[in-house]
Every structure is written in C-alpha cells, then in structure tokens.
Length: 396
Image 1 (cartoon, rainbow, N blue to C red):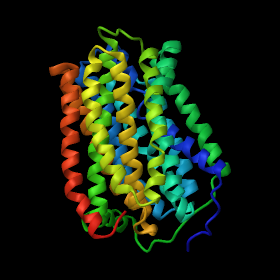
Image 2: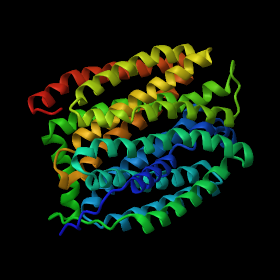
Image 3: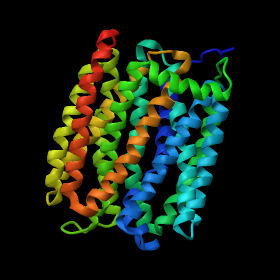
C-alpha cells in the first residue's frame, strides 16, 4: 500500500534542491580540472574528455537500473544508501594512482549519484498538483546549479590543495547530506505489482507506447548534448591563449551559468499555466542563437559569458518543461518515466562530451560551436515533428 502523502513545505523543498545539486555535482567536479588531470596521467585531450564521458555513461546506467527501484522500494532508505555509495566512489577517485582506477571511481560515483533523479519524482509526488511544475522547477534548478557550481567549487579547491582535494571534500559533503536526508525526508513507499525484471521491461514499454515521453526524451537528450559540448571543451579553451586562466578562474565561470539556471525556474510555472510548447520552442531557438554568440568567445570573454548564460538558460528551461509534462502521465510510474527520460538525457551528455573533445582537438573552439549548433538544429527538427503528438493528445 502507498504510504500516506506527507506535506511538502518550503524547507523540505530547499533541502531536496540542495541534495539534488550535491548529488549531480559529483559527476562535474572534473570539468575545470581536465587540464590538470591530463597532466597528472599524461593524457591527450581525447583521453581526458573520456573521463567526462565515463561519468555520463555511469549515470545513464544508474538511471536505467537503479532509478526504477523508487517505484518499488521505500524511497528515503534508498536515497540515503545511494548517497553513501556515491561518496565511496569519490573516495576511490581521490585515491586513484592511475587512470583506470580513476575511471572505476568515476563510474561508481556516476552510477549511484542518480539519487538526484529519485528525489525529483519524489518532490513531484509530494507536491500539490497545482504547484507541481513550480516545485519540479525549483528542485531541478538545484540540480543544474549543482552541475554549474561544481566547476566553481572544484576550481577553487584544486588551487588550494590539488585536484584530489576536491573529491575528499565532496565525499564528506555527501555523507553529511545523507544524514540530513535520513533525518528530514518523510518515509514514502508505493506498492507496484511488478518484480524487478518486469519493472525494467516496463520502462521500454512506456518509452515505445507513450509518444509524449519519447518526444520529450529525445528533446532532452539533444539539449543536454549541447550542455556537454560546451562544458567539456571550455576548460581547454580557457586554459590556452588568449585566456591562460587557472583552474580557479575557469571554475568561476560556473557562477555565470548559475544566473541562467536560476532564470529558467519560471519554465515550471509556465508549464503549470499550459505554456509548455511555447517554453520548449523558445528554449530551443535561444539555444541555437547562443552558439553563434559563443563562437565569438574564442577571443571575447564578454561574448563567451553571454553565450554561457543563454545556453544554460535554454537547456534548463527545456529540461524543466520536459519533466513537468511527463510527470502528468501515470503518477504511479514517475520513477520509471524519469528513468526513461533521464537515461536518454545523459546518453546525450555522454555523446556531447565525445563530440566536443573530438571537435576541439581537430577544429578548435569554432569546431565545438559548429557541432553544438548542428545538434540544436536536429533538436528543432525533432521537436517540430514530435510536438504534433502533444497537440493531438491535448498536452499543454
């Protein structure tokens, strides 16, 4: 039987937002450190970029294999255990003497840091229906802020004590967050008449039988590919001429992206008011424009900052809208809907990391921007085709 639905007060929403941010940040601390890590292990740009790809693939595996358990098990206990295991993965990374050991820690961290994607549908479940989009927007803003501010925190800590210090501090923060979640999260469990194998199989069934989920999943996949295209190569751009920035200075640009993430919170409220198609279309158009501006960032810091803000605003706005839309379908299956959507999302992130590192090595920053623009055009075509399904099923 489903546990009684407890209230969701602002303090609990704030805690869940911070927890999602800390969890997902585990996969992004390495981005401003890639140049330093590459020197430590004598890696090429492509090899260093594979660290980010490994994190994304580990996260995608966790989304597919672990997030659906939220529809079966008691969620507070599941969230706490996974937070502690993610912390263990970062300890392995901090101790890694070689690249393979670092990749092992990276995979384990990515696998279990999907706890963020159990917190988001839990917040949607606990929220009142008329406030669901707003709550999802707030929690998802915490998630994207975690991704962006991870760069700033990692850059600062690396300057103080080296790149390994970043992972020691992050592992301690995850343990402390696990304790806070155990203390304040309500216990919540719902009864699903499926075993684990059936639960996983139902994700694919949902994906192929729910056009709205499929369209939103591909839209999210290509949007997050854009985000990874920018983030993976930006450290190499800023570490070289004409910038020559240190890790701390590179990390500070995460604060710039945070402005875009916060501005995108309103997408959830607009989705509540039936404007989901408008926010999606507008977000994708802004995303495309951002790449033209970002290209000038090869020699203009102002253009780079404007491009980062616009890209982060559009990616977050599209993402919040996507989740607000899919959570209206099958409330009893929100974790499986999340698994289907977010697996596509982070596969896009892994794809974007690979494309970015390759483009930068062969064509520099302009090659990266061309790749991002091309992916966005594909996304606009996908949305133009898929939006008709939402219109035919009276989705907002």
